[in-house]
Every structure is written in structure tokens, then in C-alpha cells.
Amino acid sequence: MDYKITGYEPAKLFHYFEEISAIPRESGNEKQISDYLVGFAKDHGLWVYQDDVHNVIIKKAASAGAEDKPAVMLQGHIDMVCDKLGSVEHDFTKDGIELMVKDGILTANGTTLGADNGIAVALMLTVLDDDSLAHPALECVFTTDEESGLVGAETLDKSQIDARTMINLDSEEEGVATVSCAGGVVVTYTRPITRERTSGSVLTLEISGLLGGHSGADIHLERGNGNLIMARIVERLMIAGNPALVSFNGGTKDNAINRECKAELVYADRAAAEAGAELARDIAAKVAEELETYDPGFACDVAIADDVEVEAINEDTALAFVRAIRLAPNGVMRRNLAADGAVDVSSNIGVVATSDDEAKILLSPRSSITSLQEEFKDRLQTLADVLGWSYAEHSPVRDIFLESYRELFDAELRIESIHAGLECGLFAEALDGLDAIAVGPTLKDVHTPDESMELASSERFYTLLVDVLKRLAA
Image 1: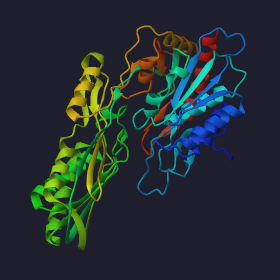
Image 2: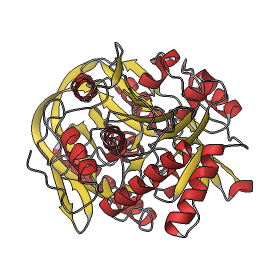
Image 3: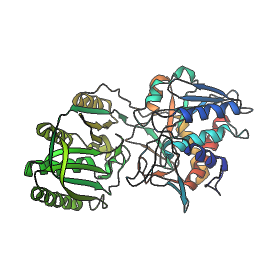
């Protein structure tokens, strides 16, 4: 393989990242990457387990002198959020990620990078591949379908795991260790629709330029949500000029803040469509002013096509659909004022879509407080499980990370909670007495085509991980 990432150590870490980046691994399409991991284990003579949903566990015996030390679990997920710019031709079912390196930053060419959580996979493979390292017995757990609801971690047979110390590698800021996280559910609203053939002037609205982001880690940044903005515009147009809604589509993932949205409305004639276009531009200008500080790239393109025949959604159903989007909870719902305003409860309108016969809204509500998450579930009438992870007052692995980071980098590791769900909660529920921490190198703009990874940060993080394992083996 002709590797693009050069000049960074250990070289194998970045080589493995490039190798897995060449393998399609969208949530639900993980068999190929799962089989790659099984092949790696067999090639290296390691114990391996693979289940029906393609979770993989690879075990490696302790290094010499550490045979009596408790086993340690390293864990990350093998799937990735697959999103791209509308102008980019890329088939995530068969195309690998096109990597680009510039000024020490790794990105992809108009798509998500998959460093969330591909870097965890590369880290574990590098550790497993190095027989010179000191470490306790290792149990590397590679889970599937994390991005669409922690499915792999939930279904994995955890009796295969002996370790009661867990290092989750799905945190996204170097120098920060995560010790609690929010539980999340996915809520899907669907409604049958009927269509009626009509003709006239079609007004097309396209929202673009929003920053987007992770619905947990970035929800507090007040970024615009394309679905919610579009619903605001479309509802006003429907009330003011009586157009019929043809389509309304925005977002590809429930857990990504929506960046782009497109809607089509049909008017009786050109004059009515032009009046609608003028109103849409006026509302968009107000939105741009509102977002100037937090999301300055917002744009709304408006176009009109005359004498078009379309299948429009029934008027009552269309208005009810648009109003449901407007009323759906979105953004920060509650903050913890006793913890520097950290987010306790949030929700994200991730996906809105209309097909021939159905309208759909996908929400991603989150809460770090079980009772509030339960209340959210009641309000939204879902059957999803709560996936909370409580803070552990006594955590030996946390203390070791603090000590290692201090001695390696002459700085303090920051300990915090996050508003994004991690798989640690599910493992903690199943493995009594589990001591868990989540760490990782610096990633930015995950779940968006702007996703990036700082290569020097990955170097430093690998040094930290190896040192922690050495301390656990001592």
C-alpha cells in the first residue's frame, strides 16, 4: 500500500489507520472490517472471537512478568458516520476514504474522515502488533453499529470479557479524560402521506453552509439546524401563499447536527412563486443575522421553475408534518448550573425525509440524568433503553492516567463529563465493578465532512497509552 501519512511514529499506527480507511465501514456495513480484524488476529496467532453482528474481541497474553496482573480491556467501535458534501461523488458502501494530509492535519476529501472511531482501531492493532511492550493481559473489544445506537456494545456477549478495567478510546480531545457520559435514544416519527398530481411553478429552497457537528459534543455551540430553519421558512410560506409541499429532505444521521436541507413547493403560477421566493429570502436574511456569531456560513438558495408537473403532498398532512418539525425539541433543553453550565439534556432533529408515501423525522435526545432521560422517553413515546454512565468516585485507572500524563507532559490531565453517549455505560451495566475511562487524541468536527485529526496529537496519545499499560503491568 502506498501510505500517505509519513514522518510520524509509530509508523504502524498510521499505516493501520490508512488500511482500515480503505475499507467501507458505515454503521450496519461492518462485515468487511470485522473480517479484516479476524484475519489480523489469526495472522498474529492471537485468540479471537467474532459474533453474528460482527463484533470482534482479540485477546493477547500478558507480557513477561505481568502474568499476575488483572486483564485490561481496550475498546472502540469499528463503524463510522458517513456524511459528505452534496457536490462530492462518493459511495460509502464500496469506496474507501480519500485521505489528505496538510500541515500535520489529516482530513478526507469532502467526506467524514472516520477517525471517530478508526483511530481506536488503529491504536489497538498497533499495541497488539508490538511484542516489545509491557502490558497486562489485553482484551481488545471492537464493537459495531455504535453510531446508530450503541447496538454492537449492547448485543455483545460480555461473558467473553474477563477484564474489569476498561480504557475506551472514543474520546476526542487530547489531555482530557472522560469519566461520565450522557445516555441517548433514537426517536423516529413516521406518518403516512398521500399525494395529488398538480402543476405550476416550483419553488426550490436549499440551505447550506452550516457548520453542523456532533449532536452531543457540539450541541451547546448554538449552531443552526438546517431542518429546523427550513421548517420555519416553509411553514411561513404555506400560511402566506398556500403552496403545496412536494418534498422536504435534510440530514443523513440522527446524531449529526444537520448542515444541509432542501425543500420544494409548487405554486399555482409564477407570480405566486415569486412572492414566496421574496418572503423566503426575507426570512433567510433574518436567520443569517441570528446566526452571524455562531454559524456565519449559513446560506439559502432560492430558485423557480415554471410549468412543472409534480406529485404534491396533501395540504393538511404537509402542514402537520412541517409543524411537527418546528415543535420537535432541538438544542439544549437544560444545563447544570452547578457544573459550569454543562449540558444535562438536549435533543437534535437529525434527519427529516419525505418519500412517495411517508414522512419521517429522526431525533437524537440525550441526557446524563436517568430520570430526565426517562421523562424524554415518555414525552416522545419511545421504547429505547437508557444508556447512562455514572461518575465513579474511586477509579484506579483514572489515577494512573493522571500520574502518567503529569510525568510525560508536565501538565495536568483534565477530568470531565461529556454530553455524548459512550459505550462504557453498557459495559458498566454488564460487568460488575468495572473501572472505566474514555480517552483519545484530538479530533475536530466529527460527524461532518470537516472532520480532522491532529497527527502529532495521535503520536502523543499513543505514548500515553503505552505508558499507562506499562504502569498497569508493574
